[in-house]
Every structure is written in C-alpha cells, then in structure tokens.
Image (tube, rainbow, N blue to C red; front, top):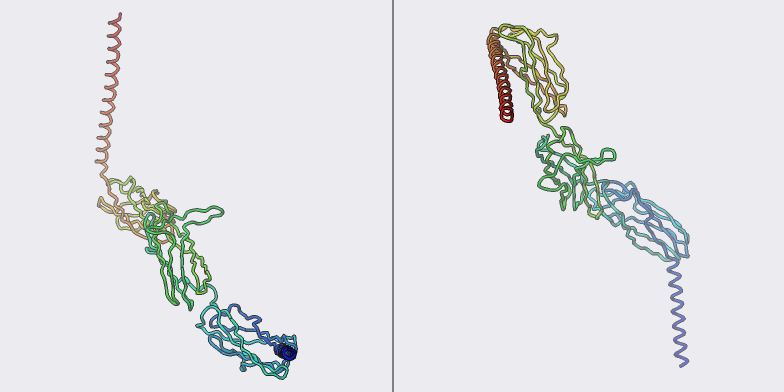
Length: 420
C-alpha cells in the first residue's frame, strides 16, 4: 500500500515539474504580432496602404534575432521595400517593437476584409520558434460608386398641359455589383421656409423607381413620365432627386442632385391693321398695327420694324418701335406714318418682328400685313346710309313713345267717365 502511495506521489511530482517547465518555456517564448493600424482606412483598390505591425514580448525571457516576414498574397504586394523580412536583434521581456510595410492594393481587389499573412520567428531561452498570424485589411472603393451618366428629356421642352419623358441613366463604376437601387423625384421645392409644389405630376407611375441589381460597368435607366400643369409658367425648373443603393458589404450609399426640366411653348404672335386714315384719295396718313400674343407664354424684348418697300415711303422718324414685354392673351398697338406711291389699292406692309420667349430663345420673322385702301366716296355713302338708318330708327322710337302716351291718356279718361 505504501509503495503504491509512493509511486503516486512520485508521478505527481514529475507531472508538476513538467508543468512548471512547460509554463516556463511558454512564458519565455510568448511573442505575438498584431495589427497596430493602417492608412488610409479603408484601403483603396489600385492605391498604396501603409501598415504598422506591433511585435510584443509578453514572456519572461528576452528574444533575439526576431524576424518578421510579410507573405505576399493577393490582393497585396510589397511596394517600395526590397526585403520582405525585417529583423529585431533583441526584444526584451515585456517590451514591444513597431515595424511598418507599404503595400500596393490590386486594382481589382474584392471589397471587404482581405487577409494578410505575417510569419514570426525568433530565439528564446535557447529554443527556436516560429508562428503565422493572419491580419485582416478592409478594402473599399472611395466615394459613391454609382454615377449619373446622362439626363434626357423628351421633348427637350414641355408645353404647359403636355407630357414629357424624363430618363436618368446611372452607371456602376465600381468593381462589384450594387443592389437595391432606388431613384426618387421630389416634385416639391423649398422657397425660404415654404414648401411649394413644382408644376409637374407623374403619369402612369409614381415618382420613385427601383432596380434590383447593377453589375460592374453596366448602365441602368430610370424613366419617368411627367405632365406639366396647364398653368405652368414657362421657365427652367430644378427637380431634386435622390439615389440610394447598397454595396456588396451591405453599406448604404446616398447621392442627391438636381435635374433641370424646361417648360416652354412656341410663341404664337399675329399682326394686322387695326385702323388707318389712308384712303384711295388720301395717300399720306397713319396706319395703326395691332400685335396680339395668342400663345401660352409671354414674349420679351419685342421690336416691331417696318421694312422698306417700293409701294410706300416711311414718314415716321424711325422704322423701329420697341414694344418690350407682351404677356399671353394681350396686345399692343404701333403707329407708322407712310406715303403711298403705288397705284394699287392693296398694299403689303413687310413687318419684321424680333422677340424672345420666356426662356430667352430668340425669334425673328417677317410678316406681310395686307393694307386695303378704301374709296372715300363709297365710305361716305356707307356712312350716309348708316346715318339714314339711324335717323329712321330714332323716328320710329319717338312715334312709339307718343302712341303709348296717347293710349294711356285715353284709358284714364274712360275710367273717369265710368265712375263720374
């Protein structure tokens, strides 16, 4: 019995000694390498990144000839440094040492965490040791990786009350697929502290469109059918929009911008003779022209120019009359003094109209205005005939009034005779 106990005690003693030696050996060889930092963070495909590694001796013995070797592996390659191994001659117990490497990140590196392997080897307490450590470096492209490729409005200008198709095309310039793309138009604008509606309404759909996936290098089009309000003022409107999407790491990306939409209508302007004192027997006088804006938009900087003609001489001081602005459904009149040289009774007045629309588009057109000269004798006959008709009407009215008075008086006398 005593012999068994002695054997057990001896075994326990040997085990304790082995554990102490193992602990001592482990304590003597406790070297680690960890990632201290790297810049820029995150690393960018196609660019360089500087990595700082922290080597620590947490053991009880010093370590000599500590070697740190960088294992080149995709997507990282050594940049600038010729030697991939750096040596620390002596690393005392409880001390640490910082070393750095500059790496080049491959242009086509996959976004996310990429592994960088570091090998550590050293001598401690007469024992040679080595260990591999994996370090994660995050790689991600800079800024927004979906760009606005083009914006198109068809037609280029919308008339009030009409429809147009707005197409916003985006492009994925990142090396990875983007998901859950959503583009939304905001048909409101803030003026000061007031929110006002923009004069557009989405037709056949809402103001938000979505696309599930967009592969690298691919384009996608968001199409919106818009109708301009019938009372929309002609000008350029800025419509805000937002683009939201997610990268392959699930990070949400946002982009906000404006798209310009032009509301305009082609001016509809007409001109004709309003009145004149020119006759077949009176060749010199004044002609009054009326210019009417029948279009949906206003006209600006209107100039009326009477051009030279063999049929008449201009007696006015200037051939140009500046009218200025002419709003929709309004008119202005201009006068010219002329002397008729033609023997005919129909005279053409060539009038040059120069103006701009509400969006400053320039128009210049020549209109031939027909001036008919009337025979003064026929005009007098017509006037006399009109005067005669007027006189007859007046006489008839007077006779009717007299008849009514006489009838009323007779009725009163009859009533008095009956009751008298």
